[in-house]
Image 1: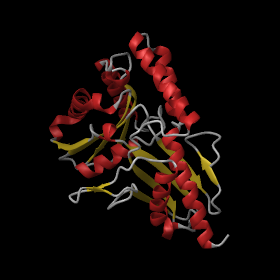
Image 2: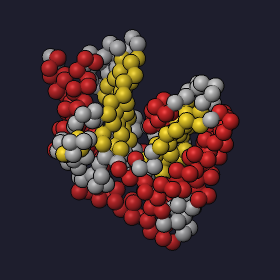
Image 3: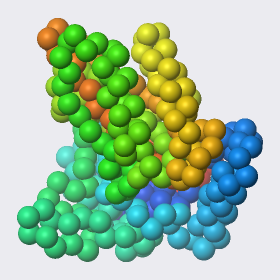
Image 4: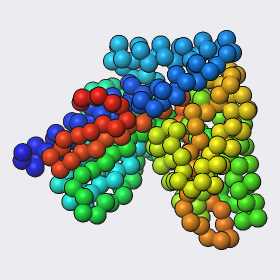
Amino acid sequence: MAHAEQVKKMTELVAKFVGYTGKVLPDDVIAKLEELRREEDDPMAKVIYDTMFRNQQLAKDLDRPSCQDTGVIQFWVKCGTKFPLIDELEALLKEAVVKATFDTPLRHNSVETFDEYNTGKNVGKGTPTIWFDPVPKSDSCELYTYMAGGGCTLPGHAMVLMPGEGYEGVAKFVLERMTSYGLNACPPLLVGVGVATSVETAALLSKKALLRPIGSHNPNERAAKMEKLLEDAINAIGLGPQGMGGKASVLGVHIENSARHPSTIGVAVNVGCWSHRRGHIIFDKDLNYTVLSHKGVSL
């Protein structure tokens, strides 16, 4: 296949995948929502869960996004340094977003800051957001896609704690965001927490935490224990589905961390709503693909 044809093919596949993730939730999110619905005994909460699943069925039947806010598109790219389209990848992903915007269709959510006009294409200065992690000697390309909606973005926050505040300070920071802004994000929520040195390092980790499969745990046993403690604490708030009360407030809590300066504790929160539209796909050098987030999908 000629190089130009490869670029066109991957652009079309990514556009289809982005559009698909706006209509169908990933397998792990559906499984967790089913679990929460089974365990719920509040009548109003049960009705809301049933409505969520009705929403999902209608999105499939009508071939339309499951939420009107299809967010700002974000990509985390773990790209092999020998992947044949590495030089074209950034432009290719932007073009795929434009194509998905009109084909899916997606709501126009890219407004140029200060100039205050909507580009109408979901592409603007810095959008879609693309984070690159190079993978030495690999010829494959792994993409995580995410639709960052307005409601689930609102609780996002980052700050640097004094070291004396310790991990209790991290827990207090997270719970303050959940009790003040959690309702805005359409619970049950997936809560990503980043712990690092500074606001930007913690913030990026908190976003990457949202791209982990639900039910996965931080490999550090102390961090994993804190994930469970925060999950129990946020559930105890009783937000319930759509904030109307119920047993569960969260789909899960994921913590990502790095080493940090001894004098600082950078901490950040990013939140995904119940309609957590995440995708995970891997391309080999010949553009054969494997979809990991949605089993059995053909684009």
